[in-house]
Image 1 (cartoon, helix red, strand yellow):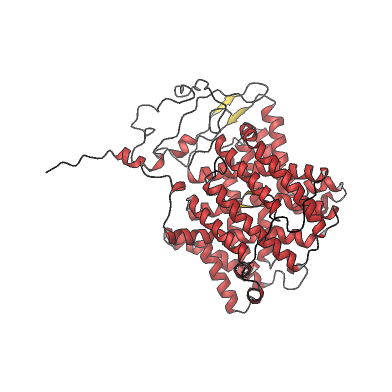
Image 2 (cartoon, helix red, strand yellow):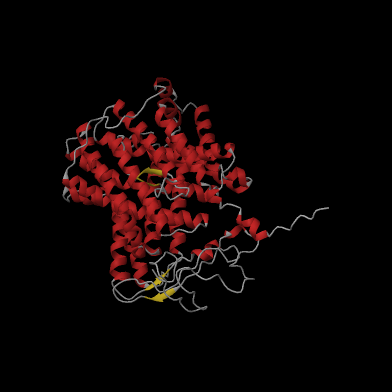
Length: 540
């Protein structure tokens, strides 16, 4: 009898894809993808609603903006998750309209007279900023050394904390009820609290598969209870058209004006930092290495999506932090789930009636689910901040002052009312103000002086044999004038955390030789490599 050769377990494990690249069965792709859509929908449509109301658009024009937004969101998410050429991070990142651009776009549109005339000036600035983002992406990715964990963690924490008030507002009944007796009544609070408790109960007592659908089940369950009590209105579903297509330049050719373009370029700078933080956050959650090329591809996707937004009557796009919280909660890491979600978004953008059905979910139910997701975004930021030595006074000040700055527009709405309109368009965003503060303070304290850098060690994150709950921190002395590469790059374990024994495991005598430098001995920095600095190295 012929002898079957014994398979090498490491060779077998090499064939197993990383969970990010795993293609799930169609049923799971459908469920998980739809969950992303429901988690994303409220935040996706709030931007066109806010802008449309501020510019006094008609109801039909507002519905058109929502459909155009959903259509572009779907296309942009597929590009980001699936990847086209050197565009797209190929990570489970959903693309959505950035909240950072809301206040500047309102200021630009109102300054141009409001209505569709204001939209044309907004779209001219959006298209220009998108092109600049695409062209600047590879250069910006090399500036990652100026965004250490104290900056990335602070920005992600700010994003989560500034989004939570929006969730709480929905929990009370939504912005449309503010000033009315129904705002914050016990029924609305009951829907929100019941949805949140249901999600927590499913996570606590459910099996892993059921827990991964907790947000979807919470939204369906909360909507079902509200429907039984007569608080869900499906009349808009009957009135909506079955099919509608967003055509390019629907409101006319864009207008390109200097000051609106400058304001939008500042917005896109902040969104590039935001996307950089989101890419590293999703890399840490999924335990997949992120490098400069990954960041550049993600930023190119932002640029392409933003240009498409200006053409198809939509807005600037960014990797959505909200859905990072969903990935963390569900533990479903496949990027093809986001591709499926993008397909659903395109359908919703082409079928106003289907979009109206999703829009029928009551605001309190959405708010209850959003509290957990937005809170998870802040938690990811706090997790990254855990790798920073906050006992060091300057790092602590970067975090403290940035959080305080971010809270100004949220806690004191009229704080900048006496500022010039162009300045107010930038400063009225907590994410923009807090992000700029973190970047500038880091340059002042940690870049232009001799400071110690604390890094994320991606090899340890990917190594299954390492203690994932005790991330490796490496402090080195920085030379004056900025960060300089000193450590050799050590490649990730090609087997990842899924092999019975990877080459980085404790039984291996030493890691393989690094392609860009000779790794140093324990306790000593490696020799400099031939390429530029990488996130996760002993130095930037």
